[in-house]
Figure 1 (cartoon, rainbow, N blue to C red):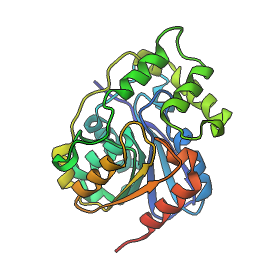
Figure 2 (cartoon, helix red, strand yellow):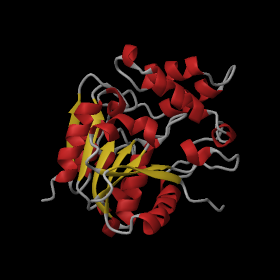
Figure 3 (cartoon, helix red, strand yellow):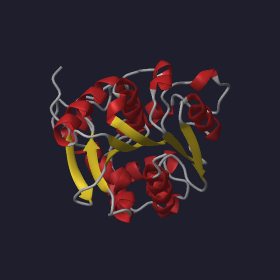
Figure 4 (cartoon, rainbow, N blue to C red):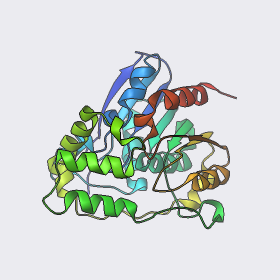
Length: 270
């Protein structure tokens, strides 16, 4: 299947090293919704945000697809060859982190450093276990949101409260509304009932040579800090940071903390 170039755009500084921003895979996720606050807090960085196929502004066509991490990495690689041919860093959430890891394993010369938030590339990183994970949560969240009477702003807020935010009273109405609108594009609705393409990246982790910060919400219901520690240990150059009082979307819930951690890690070059 042919996939058109994903929607993308620039934020922050007009020049300098490029940091690619990749969103999560939940209903309505897209780059500027997931990371808008972090981008605003670090305007001195040169950000390239990308809406992967089937999401955000890339999901406006009914033919838009939800791709496996490997397929999405191929689409991203083609985009980068055109708009950012030099080595780039990556700031990624959940599904976007899987895409980043796949690209880093396949094309190590393209990726400098990675900040990986809430990503689960394999059930048991490095063979560790048992770990506190809920592998079926993503499918249940999607089925609940698109099922019944269908999606709506109130259901989006309930989704975010149940699986993405720790302090649910602080969810901005603007963020919930942006997520809802992105969840009902023709492409999003066309793929709403499709299962996420299954792919275990466990065998690829050893090929990721890029320094990688595994950044985790302390109360992430998809997987706990023990999973994050195992993932950091399984990566050749992995580091770990756990952010308290936050869940699966720490970059949205505690953007100042995430911006500081990401900026320090991406700036450090040794």
